Image (cartoon, rainbow, N blue to C red; front, side):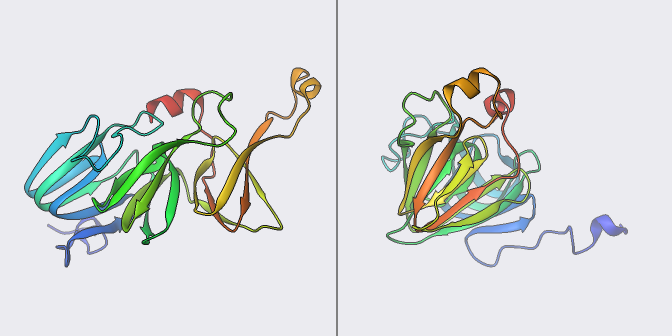
Length: 225
């Protein structure tokens, strides 16, 4: 068989070591040797001797909850083999979480992660009266975290001298040591008159980075994720 489709650009290669790697811009490959975790429905192909198990309220006692704040159910993948993950042709990225560090991420952006990582669900500070969507998963430990993002994300440095304001529907995640609060950029009167449509943003202060996607989730889109 010949043609560009069968070129090395598209042909997968055997994994050289266990764990997570970026197969291409839209797909992450995981060479499983034991177990790992991923969002349900994200598997697009696999080979080898693998079992997939839907998870409810925990995975071996490691996870406090197996559902993110966005209502994202997880599955455990166990055995020996290779599995490929993707979600709606979104761009894929791998984050290396180091020991002693933390990474806070929106549940809709989680694709898969190493079993050495644990997470807990936290409410964004100051968002208790703001409604849904401001719950995030805080990952800690040491390992790799696979993320998806609609488009190419923006990574914006945050400094103590210059806080960053982001749309709550566009934020993907942020690094440790950042403090968050909700910031209202319009007066009540301006909001009643229609305003700019950007009434409330998430303000981040401290030293670190915030990751933002170049699109906002509509209510219908957010429910699908």
